[in-house]
Length: 231
Ligand code: DVN
Image (cartoon, rainbow, N blue to C red; front, side, top):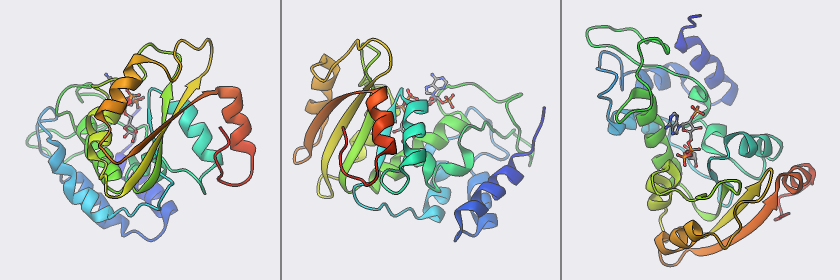
């Protein structure tokens, strides 16, 4: 099935209010249209991130790695307290979608003919660029939801480790809290070796916290009123 990308982008953009959606579409599309879909550098999306001009509300930013479903189920109920990049204008319009361009064409293609998750593909470069913009805007206390059901919840090649954490400005980010979520059997706790790596890589001046949280507890927290730390 083929759905053009633009109507979805524009509809989602209108839901957010306050954006010139045609202008955002133009800034987005110029990154990949007419290009080899394997040669889209992250910088090609800078006109888009500049046009979104995202200003983070302090203490609300929620990062994640290998917890996509569980984190979004949580922020869906807690939008006043926590925002992932997909809950903001940086990520909302493109969440869950695939696209690319083609040399010599002015069209946007969907899935068929688009490369997979390889270096400099149109979709991957977009998420790397918007993740960098999201992390750059972070201030105050930030949170990351990591996966306690795997051996290495902090993976150095993940977008969170390789782009977002490196992008925190230590003069603005006060603390990072790891919420280590366990769905089934807890393979990992806050004593995990990869979390020691995380602490070593955290910029000096940013305070580290870690909480082991079951998914059941997280569900309870998402139903609690207020933004206080429930875990
Ligand atoms: O903090 C978040 C958020 O801000 C986001 O922009 O980046 C952070 C999450 O990225 P991450 O740390 O690399 O976490 P993941 O879980 O390893 O990867 C996140 C997503 O990237 C995956 O869910 C994949 O998206 P999809 O296919 O479910 O829509 C995608 N992804 C990552 N590596 C991939 C891949 N898709 C296919 N193949 C891969 N090797």
